[in-house]
Image (tube, rainbow, N blue to C red; front, side):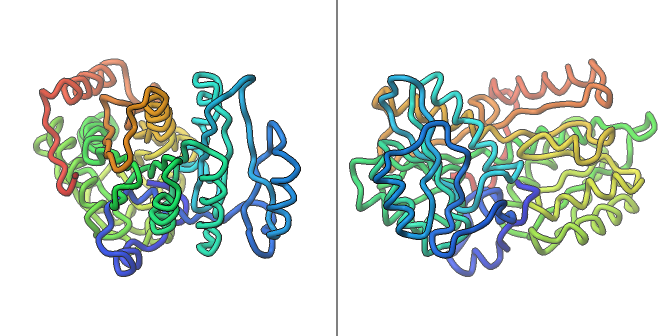
Length: 376
C-alpha cells in the first residue's frame, strides 16, 4: 500500500460497497504543480508534443495536453490514467516505470493522464484516452465508476483496471495476490533479530480494519509463523489511511508489546512506523509497494515491491498477441511479477536471504500454500 494519503476505506465501502481492490488504489497524495481552474490534469514533461489540434482542444477546457512519448515507428498507442497524479513515489510511480519498457520493448506510443482527484474530469479524460489509444491502463479506485461507463461506450478500446475487479464485462481486471506478497513480509519479520536474539513478537499495522487489509494481515501472520512458530503477532489498526502520527503511536505501542519488525499496510499512516524507527525506537519497519529504505536509513531490513510496471507490460504483450479479452480477470503474485522482495544486505545476511529466497521458491512452486481470504 502507499505511504501517500489514502481515501478512508470505510468511506469508500459506504459509497460503493465492499472494497475489492488493494488499498494502494485509494491513493490521495497531494498533487505537485499548479492546477488549472477546470480540467486540472497535470502534465508530465513530454518527450514528443501532441498534435496542435489536441493542444488547442484541451486548452479550451482549461487543461493542458497529456504527455506523450513514443519509440520511432510506433504502432500501438497506450494510455496510462491515474485518478490522482504521478510523483507520489509509490503506486502511481510504479506504473510510470512501465512507460519506458512499453516504448522500448513494444514500440508503443505512451500517453499519460492525471485525474488529480477531480471526479468530474475522470470521464472526459478517459474518453480522450479512449479516442487516442487502443489500450488504456487505469489506476485508482476513485475512477472505477468512470472507467466502467467509458469502456462500455468505447468498444474499440481495451481498458485494463490495475489492482481491482471491475464488473460488467467491458473492462479487463488485474489483481494482486495480496496475502502471497504479505506472506514474504511476514517471513522477513520472522527472521528479524533484535540485538542478535529472536524478539517475542512481530507487529502489523493496518490502515482500517477492512477485508483487503485483513487479507494482507492473514498472509503476514502465515509468513511469520512459517519461520518463527513461537513468535506472537501483534496487530493495531489506525482507523485511517492518512494519519502518520497515529501510525507512529501504534508502532511505539507494538514495540512496548515486544514487537520488533513492524509491517504497515496503512497508506500514509504507515509512515509512522518509519518515523518511530528514526526517532530511536527499537523497531525494524518493513516497506511495501516500493523500496522504503530511505525513509529510515539503516533501519529497514527489506521491502515488499508491488510489480505494477511488470503487470502492465505483461498485459500489454498479451494484448499485442490478441490474448486480452474484455471482461477477463488476471491475478499476479510472486511467480508472475506481481510481488518481489528487496533486502538491505547490511541488515539481512547471506544465510537469511537464502532462507527467504527458498521460502519464495516454495510458494512459486506451490509447495507452500498461502491462504488468501477474499481472493477471487
